[in-house]
Length: 310
Image 1 (cartoon, one colour):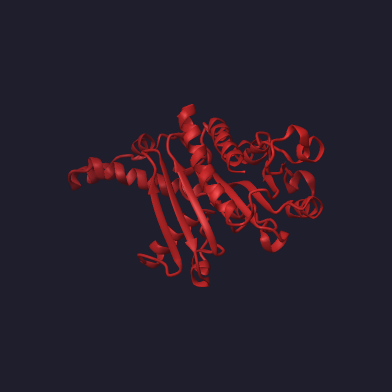
Image 2 (tube, rainbow, N blue to C red):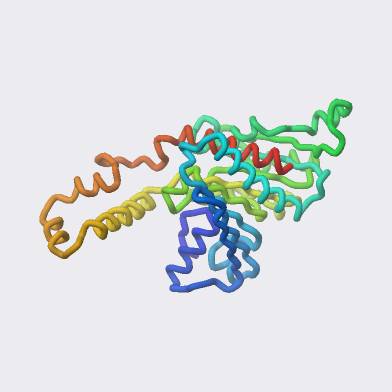
């Protein structure tokens, strides 16, 4: 098994294909749709055990929605992105439950750590209806789906595994499906808080950063689990790797001959690298300085997408 260091199925596919010099993987289907200049939707479906073992992801559906320029997104752009998320999520929900069946929305993460706070922040924006249907049915429109939501915190502050908390909730409230929101790791700095992966195979919290917790899935909870993951961090190796690619690209653009490269070799290349990567000495930030704005925009997109879908 490769150390993919990413939770995204599309990235794992690309890494495996590149490492094995393959054009395609048997048992893995891909559909790509460019919505506009800023939004792209890629659907990956794993259909057999061979593909499952190849990229280390369970058989099922993985939908990756990439959104460019999210940190400067307008209200109209956020709304459009949320509608796309809603359409994909609604379609996936419809494959597992009926329109009136109860859904539990779970926001994983630590609200006090910005890159890990998306899940709890989304929960604050979810339109919960279960209590209204139970206690004030006269004020609820007929046909409203029961929806409940919870942010269970993290093991380090509760001392309880998230899966154990959810098992207790599921046993008592008996929802028919769970939607889980969590932060992911990516192998691309451009995808930080600009990508949403929606899958129907559950989730292993912390897997992308080597801090695996108990799996949250249909196998462990007995009901379908749809996971909505958003990359918010990358490791140092990713930053260095992407930085090298950017630097090489800059060299290719400027190097009209070997004379330029020979001259560069004789000089201190630090300033060239600094100029190309726009970072200072020993800058080891693994989440962008705009992470607060990115999380807020992504929170709106995910919360609206869920509310529209359910």
